[in-house]
Image (cartoon, rainbow, N blue to C red; front, top):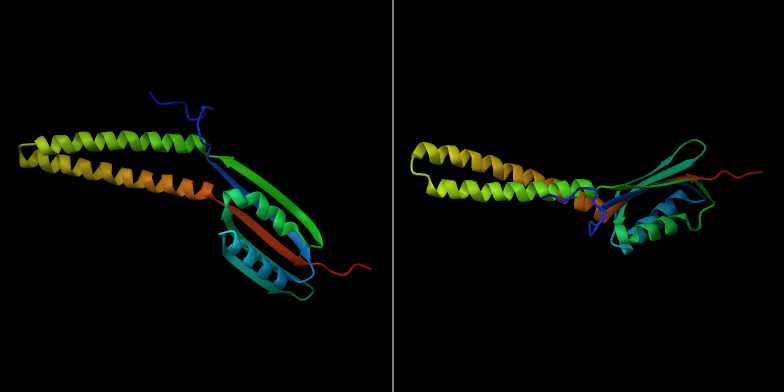
Length: 173
């Protein structure tokens, strides 16, 4: 029996959260530096950062990963002490169904692995041993692939993404 992937009784939901914002500021470089220090202080990381000067403006961008538990705090912090929040978008993706299916598939494969290992241990001919060894290797490769996928989903849910674009605000007359 496999529980439905969308079973609301699933103990822990796996949700991937992300945000994108464009902020108007006076000093782009200073804001990028402040945000970098803040992200480090909450055990996050900056995966990409740039500041570009154009003829009439300065633009900075950052791709940030923060612990999921600090996501709301980080989104609020980044909006503090700016001239203007030009845009803000927050989204969530519930991947619980995929996580449940992946765990179930891994359990099935591990059962198959144990069965093939037993057959291999009991095999008497070289031909049978070679055939079973090849099948066992294929199953183990599938297990490794599914484990990688499971780890990737856990990482996505554990660390939320925030894209920040800073734009120097022009003086308004």
